[in-house]
Image (tube, rainbow, N blue to C red; front, top):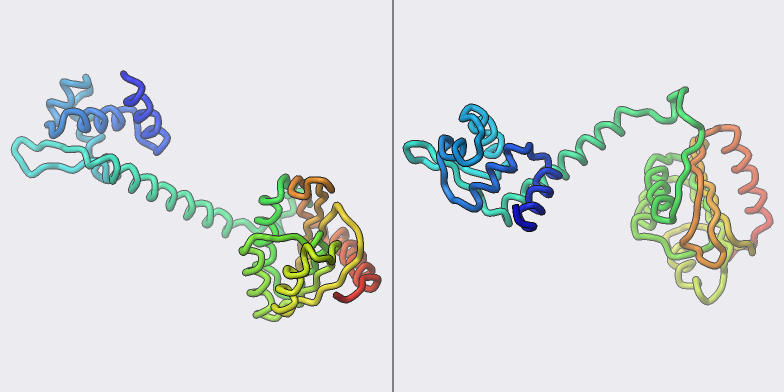
Length: 250
């Protein structure tokens, strides 16, 4: 097996093909149309197994049956078939993951931990969006006052549109983030400023909070926890409103 065919076989296996399916598809790519008997002779696979595998490959869109006698099978161009297979597999994984999430009620599961550890700014941003989408009453934020992904702008706008009370406290209020502050204010977010650095707090209704700390020299480096413990969340809400009272309106 040369390196190219070995790489192809590896990728096809990663896309969910069985060893027999990989062998048959690879053979048809190199040899063109072949009957089940010819495939059996080339690969040493019994004819019944060849038919099972070719039926599976047809379902996956990798080969087609030719209307000739005896029946022959032909590979669909890899540039088309493999891309289509990958897209189908991605779609299936997405559907399965969404279904699994929809059947989990993490807030009411008495056996779950009260905190989830998060590492990295992107993972924390993703958690923010997920929790903000669920919020119905309140989103409270203490942050550096940094640029954030458009997904956060979008979810805050959606929250404001459905009447969720939203308040931001920023640690920075200078020429570096003046335009960012004005954009938030234009959306209708009240913003106050209190000098500090190195930590972020996000509270969603009375059900979840994200508390994270960042490297003051490299703000993208951060670690945090998503908290579901109601007593801790209430303590963090008290802290937020203490800071809100001390902070100066921007």
